[in-house]
Amino acid sequence: MNSGTKAVTAALLAMAVAGVAPADAKPWTIKIGFAPPPGHMQPIIEKLEKVHPELFHHLGKTYVDQGIHFRGSTPQIQALAIGDLQIAAFGPEALALSVNNAHLDTRMVADVFQDGVPGYRSLTYVVRADSPIKTVEELKGKRIATNAIGSAADTAMRAMLETVGLHDRRDYVVVQAAFQSMPALLREGKVDCAPILQPMLVQMEKTGKFRALFKGRDVMGATETVFLAGYGKFLDGNQAAMMDFMEDYVRSRQWFMNPQNRTAAIGIIADFMKVSPSLLSYLFTRHDYYRAPDGQPNIPGVQRPIDLAVKLGVLKRDVQIAPKYVDLRFVDEADKRIGKPPAGEATE
Image (tube, rainbow, N blue to C red; front, side):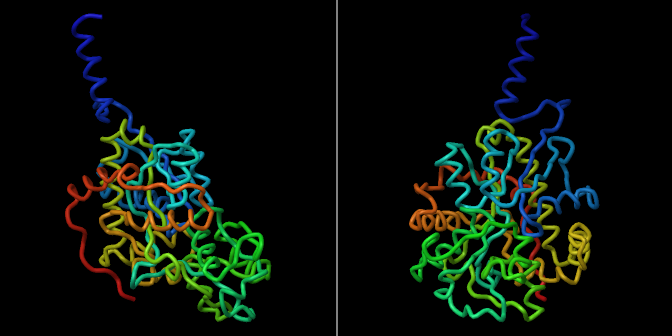
């Protein structure tokens, strides 16, 4: 190997270690997990990429993103471990399981949405209006729906029942189902209580046939319900692409949350979900779950549900998330590049 070849090889190696791609390199493909939209925004962001490509300064240059749908957080652990995902949409319990059980160097990198933040929506557990169940204690002997064992919704449900002395298998039956199926399970009497997400919740409230029994914030307070998490080896090896992806991610979120773009934003989401825009009028208001405009996650809001899940026996071992499993360099850099997010929010 001559000196010129050695110099080029050394330069390429240094760029790879630093996460910098050569100018003529193909963009990194970042596969991103998501569960039901519009709480999870990834497939909607991909729609925005086509409508407003000017918002995505680095798409197709240093990265391309590809959303992959999952029922919940915990099924994404295996996909992350075998390389089918580079970024997962995790809940707190899934992050703990990925570290303790799968032994992955998984790191939280950015906010997706938060539950129970004062003044905003909280995950709501619903019964039929004609149900005799009036209190949490009366769920004894009943069937309760959950999306995935160990998910944020599952932990909140178990924690609430634990406060009144009800234990899984002994005092109630858990039925796993996709969030989209839960309204039908309630209507048909196949379950007695189920966690309902927006926009299904607002639709069900309007019918008068259902009522709230309890909310996630009643037992867990404000939590980082869903956040983006990456495998450490990928984050370290593709730092430049991740910086660019995160900049575009945060900018796109801010576009959706900007009141000036409200009509267009809801139109894009309604078109993607094949529903009337009127059903999505709650989005990006105080009737929605909280989304941090700067993309910064609520770190204590991740640790608290993990500690609670350990106490309940849902998780066998605790794990301290900060600082080892928190990696905010990408969202911090995005905030520096973009600047202060637009002020204000829709109030309807």
